[in-house]
Length: 228
Image (cartoon, rainbow, N blue to C red; front, side, top):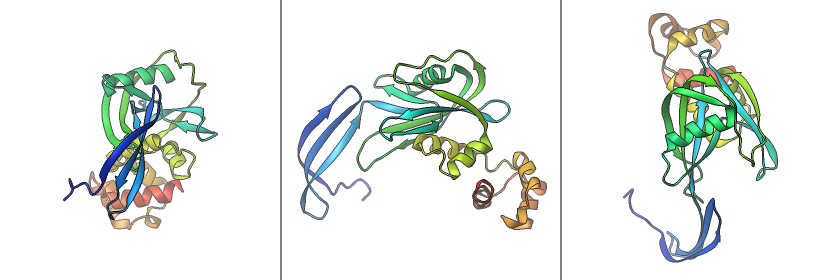
């Protein structure tokens, strides 16, 4: 059932094509049997995001004006991966270009389709650690600002809507979820705030003092209460 396609494509017409995207408009029969049209954007690059975290659990954010939005955006380092290039190699290149950083350690944190109702854009995001600072080499379309923030501050920026870029939100939240079971690292945060207002005291005590684990529901309740 999951592989069944209820749409029927009658014809396809390319209405726009450039070096980055291809747009086609299809004549279709919809799942309800009614004729219609469907516009699809095909991307010629994969979206690449990098979450560079240093030994002090700080990350480097990149700020730039986003032309389609008409507004400024703070994001993790990002870029495109052309067809034929490995996503990891693109991530290494983009991190160096946008921040000047190189990383000794790389880990794929996740993949996603960013807007699957209208496009086929696929995203990959990586954790980069063991950082060494060099000179940034942005391309001609980028006028970038940089700031180094704690991971907790970056999570706060996501929670209050200061970071709205989808790939940045995915990377920051996936790193938070990946670490939500590491109670020893969270203990100083729990101790600094009234934990009983967030989760039951017994569960917090178990997490901080009696076990290496807390469950995901408790962690998400804590994050929502803490960052907001």
